[in-house]
Image 1 (cartoon, rainbow, N blue to C red):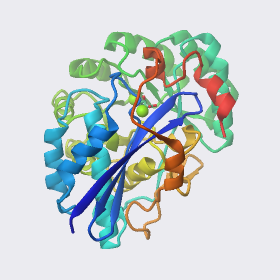
Image 2: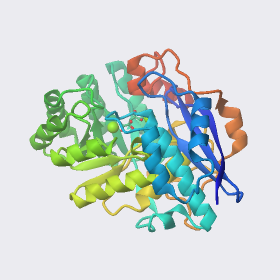
Image 3: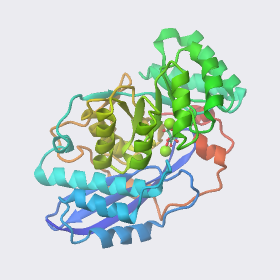
Length: 399
Ligand code: GAE
Ligand code: MG
Ligand code: MG
């Protein structure tokens, strides 16, 4: 079997916070008529420059046409030369490698008439517990709208939340207090995520203040790549600490410094199934746990994450992928299934990823290329549209 063509589409889809995200969908076609599809999710992160979609498509064609798609280890290796690892969380080259790797797994599994799970060695679970994100309250005024999100998502079955915190601790404390008073033990706060915005000592002060409200985990409580800061923080608090994994070098540094308890692994931030499995294996060998993180993928990318999660033997914390609940539209023919806060893994009897793309929808949601608007940095960090509190958008557009 040979790859004959590569096609790339860009879609723009708003979230219920009003923030618009751009995603790439890559199709790898073959001379045997089997096509693999991959998602390059959420390019709408810093750094604020855009990838030229037509140029990317041409580069991928040049790299992949004529190749045997079954040779995915070798192809992944070569793609690392084209899109090298950096020590940056939102490195766009990693998103590109991830989309290609997902497409190759989909293709290989479809060609063999099996589900991707069979390629990954099977499943140890059919569903993954996830939490709904509450985007950062920068002002006290935003707290009401965030409590309202908890209220409505709890009614829809999501009983675990993660809170982006640390910029306005008064607002964080008010929110936690209101959630505890109104919902008590019906709601679990899985984590406080400081998103690398604080130094570890400041993160520690705020954590000590917020911990009494009941939190299970602290995420990213130091600047990016501050491995010692993470370790100091970890030794000073009595809660597990997690950090995202964005390169093998960074993963190795975190292991060497014993920086965290839990590695937050998402296909998109490490470069697809093959890379994510290596990262999870390294964590397991070192006696560390894993949770499935997210960039907030569309339904297709979320299905890929669910398949990855289904194969893990060290999935030790509640996971994050809830993209299909955040976006006001999607590109799959069927919605990914969430029930009582559990993400269901696509049916194991379906070939490939087990999820289909509705290409008419892609056509309707399509953009010419990736492009940036004039959003402010705080909006990019907090995933809100200009001038909108996270809750205001949610109240406006939630389905
Ligand atoms: O830090 C996180 O856990 C997030 O999921 C983070 O990566 C977000 O910015 C996410 C999003 O787009 O909401 O990528
Ligand atoms: Mg995080
Ligand atoms: Mg994202």
